[in-house]
Image (cartoon, rainbow, N blue to C red; front, side, top):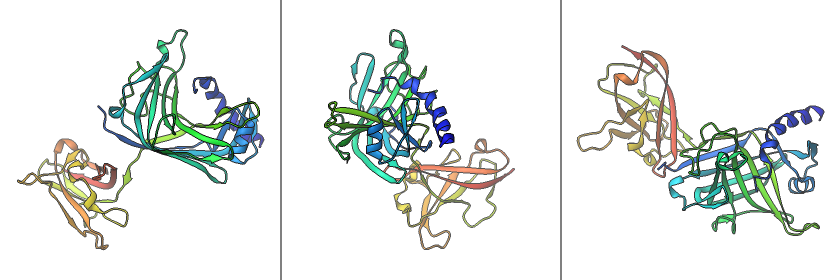
Length: 335
């Protein structure tokens, strides 16, 4: 326990000073996120123990229990409504969409928030007299705060009212506009926050935050299996800028290759070749004899895209529903 206290203390000290009281043309991009620290903490001992059902230990006025957060959302700055502001903080409704956020204690799921729309909150601290931290808060909140198409959860009298992925620190937010992409450039590692409301507390109605640190946030990508030059091993081809390179996207029980957007595909920066009728040079066949159809596409070679030797090449694209896909395979290049 003493070792655990010291570990959590080192992690919390680095961020508590930043929190203070401030927590009160791009394509849509889907993200998934999860905490990596293994701990949750709150300034309210009774609340975190009631909500998680665990006994906490105290570190510098914060009460800590084992637990984690994870979730998904889509960032779509082009979909944002015109911003509103409160002093130097700006609110962009509908800039975050299609979100889920789960709170877990040491024994499993405590509850989940889901919704069709949230908001993104930004602040440029340089524009505030006296200076405060910059802020980008992707907030996934429930009705009536943000979203009418949302579901929350209760733990006793505590209602989960919103969840956020928050970047807070110095010098990364320039102006009041939404970041063009996430994570914001030069921003620190984000925090995860769940906010709960309890109208029955003896001291009066109360909002409480449960936080976690060390979030891992990444673009949500469906990983697919690919086979460069199906049926050959090793996957060698000439670096001459002539001809095509066949690459198979392998279908399986989780992937129907009919759902691949053929025009979106790129292999090592190369585009799919097109026939005279302008249709992509792709065809369905069972290239690996596993009873699932695969999609074999021909990519136009370009000598400027390769250097001689070996390594891995990456195929990227999307499904017809917009889900990003990514696959890798080894290659060897000859002159």
